[in-house]
Length: 295
Image (cartoon, rainbow, N blue to C red; front, side, top):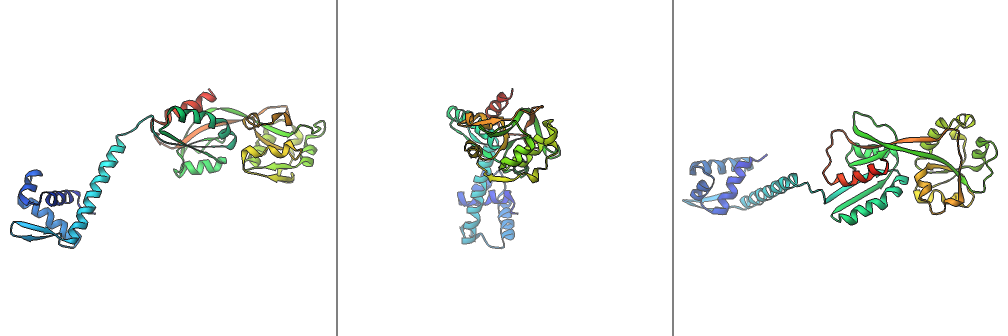
């Protein structure tokens, strides 16, 4: 690594064109300036200037080092400007959450962006495990997840709860065994379907569902677009399980029906970020919207 003090001396020498002026400008002695240049030449392995009595001419290698040093100083200034600049009203904010929560949050986030146009919002819909992975690897700054994350890797706070719903077509006859009903209907699958079904069967207090093997439920369709998952049900095809927010935001909820279990199934929601990660001030407005929705 090239010594930054030597580089600064070299830049000043080239800019002034004179050893004495360089020494005066840097509060050094003239021999001190010569020593810095000599050491820089030794480190580079090339002559950077051609000396001629009290004058000098810069070599081609010297021009390369000069441009490098100037760019390095510019980059350093830019870095310090960024370190000292934390504007709450501008910059990029990234958030990952489930597709159903994305549908719920996005309109309010757009309102925030209208009010603060210099804040650029990046909202990603993803399954729980992918959100955790992306935050751990710093691809995303924040996320909303349903599983309690590993405290070794994440800081988190509980936002609230969201109800899970087992959804069927409106005309489905639900006055029969729920187990047989699901087996006959078949599942409209999606990235979180297995996780939601497992949680639902475990917590709904319906004995026949607790004993139902998820792997034995036939899959009659699969889609990863949250806005499309309920479309087959409007045509009498299959069943699925989704958070209530996804049903509330659907365009035709009157074409659906939700089973009412003995025990409502709710999952916790956590706002998470990487362990010890301090987010910029621009996240304050975003997080105020998120917390207000479950406050």
